[in-house]
Picture 1 (cartoon, rainbow, N blue to C red):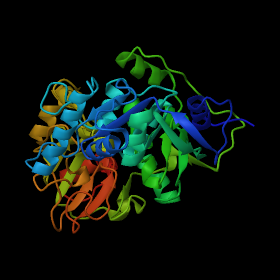
Picture 2 (picture 1 turned 135 degrees about the vertical axis):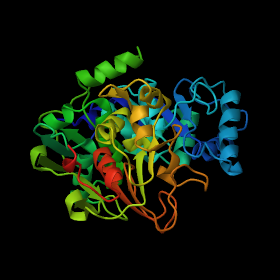
Picture 3 (picture 1 turned 180 degrees about the horizontal axis):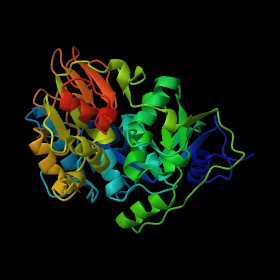
Length: 431
């Protein structure tokens, strides 16, 4: 009986030849990532259990990115960063990317990729549910709670149950009006927010492999929105080119066997799919953009680990070029690398920064910003009765700030088209 890519990676990590879904195994963790929201409690638990003077298991395998509540005057948020700073100093951590320095990187999930931590065949855990983003690199990557993270911090190990796998195959050539965000919203509408609970979601097919790494990360990023333990895409030459540009660390490529067993399989023809939204207040409340077009908006938001990558902004620039937005439109690059690209990447000979500025958008510093609500002074945060269309990943009540706001999730193309009209608009009207 063959194994899936996920089962093979977990078997390697556990030092076994074969693992089966449902089996519990000890994993040897390759990388542990944390940030300013969950880092401090993780550190607190670790110190309590391993001792104030303890040394972490491997300082080269621990990576810390402050990114969530950082550009704020909130003293509690500031104290969290202070705790990370003290910890990094105590442990002589090289992989600490402090805010306010030229080492600052932005959103952890994108920075992991850019800084060369995402290696095919490895196992990465993070204290953030969207850690599944890294699975786009043909690796096993998932989020854990602070207690599990503290145990990894002390031992480098974690006890996990091998998940069943589900396979999602997208056939055909991607039409210009579709993005990876539309593909994952399609899946969410089909299987709901608990349809993949404690399972690995494997993405496959011509359309998936035609995507660059940034778009692939959008697919795996939102696996957690279906309850998935992880999302994964087999590494190919596109993956290898990205990785080799950023690191010379070794890695191993795994592939699912032809006779691997899946809990379920879904197949799609991308030529038959349409631009989609997730309506308030759940990522699986799917509708076509056409079904809600004309809905009045108060804000448009392009950013986050899901929708703040350079490809997302290239999509938006294509529509915003030479135009003016009708409602406040917030642009939040996910990383400082993406922000730097605003100055050099062009569309029709004009830089992205100029396109967004000329269109009347507000551009922020790289961070999670309003995606997670955040303190009152958070850039782009929703207020009572806001109706927002956003490239972020969740639209639960209060997710972007006010519990009274309504958030629609959509692709950067749909958000940009909507910014031009002030109402939800199908990007096909502008392409």
